Length: 324
Image 1: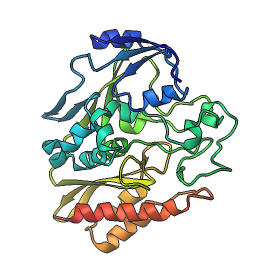
Image 2 (image 1 turned 45 degrees about the vertical axis):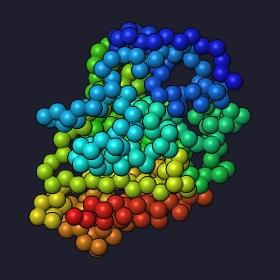
Image 3 (image 1 turned 90 degrees about the vertical axis):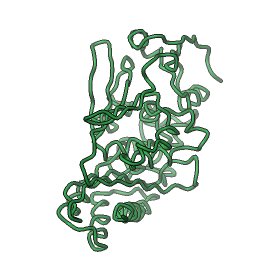
């Protein structure tokens, strides 16, 4: 049952930021916040509606790159023809997120900051480490969906598909706090679980994401997003990959490979990138890069299958990039 809360409609960005605190939360699409409130996992005393604030729904291609407002929906990202043409990896990730109905409501900013989908965290009766418990219940429990990279003391995986794509695109978030504007690279937005850090992002409750910025891809850039989930719709990744390459005379001159569903934050597969640089996208190169993407993986007893999945999704994404 949701605890009583006050509700206000924001009129300006500055007004909203001034109101934000641990007890006052911004309301965007509400597709994650409201379920958390229903389960008693979030209990804000006040909500401020962002949808009444002008300027947060812009989707603009500028000379030096893209600016995507925090309230742009995943459905809009998935169907925008210019986004699909220039930022195929982001359009693909948006299309793979949630269900068609949820994509109409879910916003990019909210999707980046959604809480983990770990069944122990989402269970109001389970006192896991992320909710102040003394250990991660997945270690001795059902850990089929949990991390194989970067885990401990919590082994949850980050649930956002667009976050993985934005890491591959070298994106950043533009934020506003009472102290002023800050641009945070996507690679620095998330923090791995540690004592004293029980939130997934580095943002404090007084900070609002205004927009996501993405540099213009270089000529010859190609991207692809591949995701494997138990169900075709409205499910979260068991393993996913965002690949963004720049090709010149069939040679890979830049490579960014980001993995999802396998770590507490979107995971940069630098060994796979190194295996691609300076190479043609032959089947041998693809096989080497796919194998390199699993370097350093430490599966739990129930999720060793993710190592094979990672190889498969990386190989499939590279083959899609290879297609004319």
